[in-house]
Image 1 (cartoon, one colour):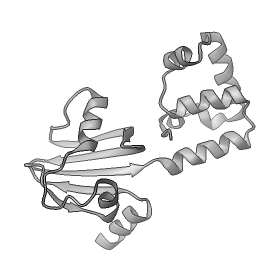
Image 2 (cartoon, one colour):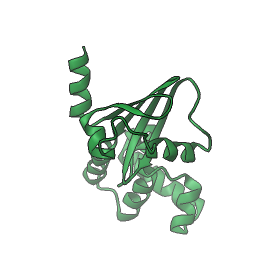
Image 3 (tube, one colour):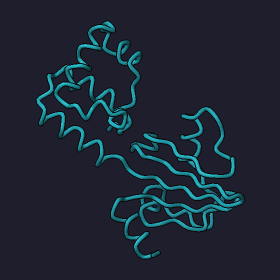
Image 4 (cartoon, helix red, strand yellow):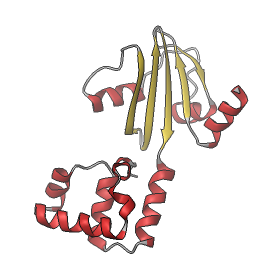
Length: 168
């Protein structure tokens, strides 16, 4: 079982870090070492934790499991899972680049217009409709038209999951 788990993490380039209550790293897989450097036995700067806390607007210190989707850590986007069984913490960072690349490929295959592609990319980056309106200086009606055109060409885009994929 453990061998399968390690292989799955390696294959998906998922980072695994185990910390003790004093934030000392007592285990990192090879992916985590590549992402953060070898921190075994040292105090973790907790870049991933601090980034996620900033995005959430609150500390991630409670017991239990917390999941955060589409969080930028460093220059990459991840789905992040925190498992807190204090005084221990496990952090899993699942990279979203493959998911994002798959959506970009679908956009090309469905022949979205330049503007539809631009809007779809902003949705992938997690932009809300109001942020898209400000960014592109377009009206609500125009955005609605573009989104409806995207949905007609890509019915699967009606699912919220496409709006949670990462940006590059």
